[in-house]
Length: 436
Image 1: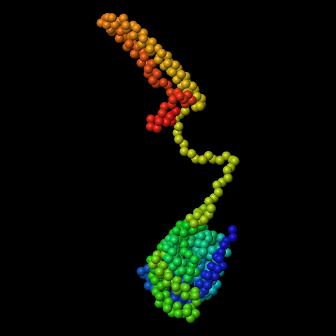
Image 2 (image 1 turned 180 degrees about the vertical axis):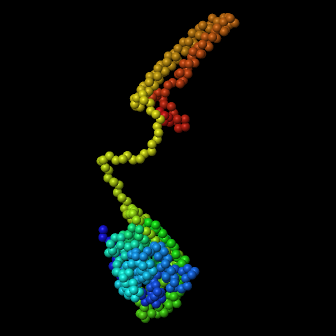
Image 3 (image 1 turned 180 degrees about the horizontal axis):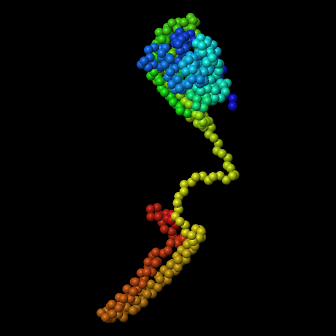
């Protein structure tokens, strides 16, 4: 699959900024010892600006633990400050890349002045789509250059491709704490970035997600803003002091539009920090020794369409997992439908027999009562001698009728197929009962 590099207009925008702002960097910021264009890292023992720039290099290097002889890609190398420092301090072989040929000419000259031209090489390359072979580097180093990548997910994938298994990535840059901002804050934020040829910053979550989606492991982002604030304040103070003269220089066309916007952005950066619109951080990650399945980032997952379900297969497939519920042991007398039909038939026969028996007993009961009364009439003439005998037939009749009444009152349940003409009704609704 062909790689898509940075758009030509964006490349020109970035090159014009760095070529056009060189005067400000050289006069206001650059230190001949470090050649650093990045911000400084302040701690209690740091005494001045030059030491803070050097200390930032040390802090970034501590995240990747360089070893002598390793090969480093300085992605966005500027005038070669970090490449030269890494080669001289750790004995590394560095390859610096930039879009600006003018920056690389200065970098080559500085490396040669220090006797490091054999260890430090520099090339014009687009860091989103380089021409290096796979697994070319042990370390990828990016100081305040990752922010210029338009597609930061593509940048992560390219760096992952270039690293050897077990290789390390480190980024020192600015990040958004969140998104979105209030419209007024977003407008100021974007104006600051445009003056420095930056389209947008990634959030803390986004840079981690993009790295993991590319395949990186052991991702970590350290917020170093408290250590950088003094360096940012220094820049802001210098712009406040120099702005009147710089603005006058723009009016008389001694300063270019690029230089003017550069100093305006330095002031806006301080205002954006007071609104908590950015943080400074060091991000580090590692390429696993064994390949791992990359996981899409949240933004990629939202942008990509949902996968189509697989087509139905005519071959036998493994049945889906089901929840097994233990059933009571079945009767082995025969199949369940046959037993149910047989039981229904027996119930029907019993019900018919019980109904016929009840009708027969209902007919027999009046006859038994009449017979008992007929026998009791002669006994009325001599109640004293025959009273007890007259009462006995009634007792026997009552006793004999009791079993018949119980059987008649509690008939056997009929099967569902033999519905009664008057089904029982529900006590609350008056509708026929659902049990029928």
